[in-house]
Image (cartoon, rainbow, N blue to C red; front, top):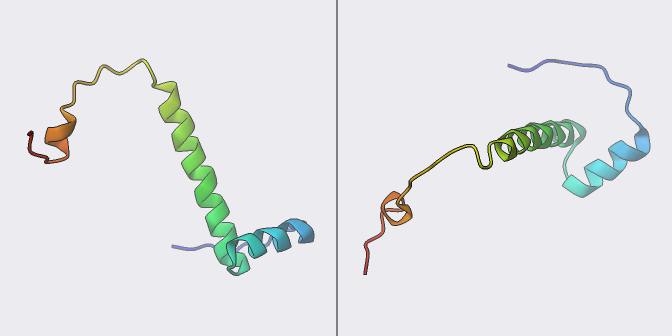
Amino acid sequence: MTRRITANLPADLLNDATSVTGKGITETIVAGLQLIKRQRAASKSRLLKGHLDLDVDLDASRERHRR
C-alpha cells in the first residue's frame, strides 16, 4: 500500500540526498524512511545488551561441521 503526500522539503537537502543515492525523489525518501526504521530497531536492540542470556552453539546454527 502506498500513500500520496505533499511535503515542503529544503531544496538543497533534497538535491544532496538524491545525488548521494543516485535515485529519484520517491526512492530517496523511501531510503531515508527505511534508514530511520533500521536505526530505531538498532537502538531498541542495544537496550537489550546485557539483559538476554543466550546459549547458542554458533557452529550448529551455521550448520558447520566441527573439525
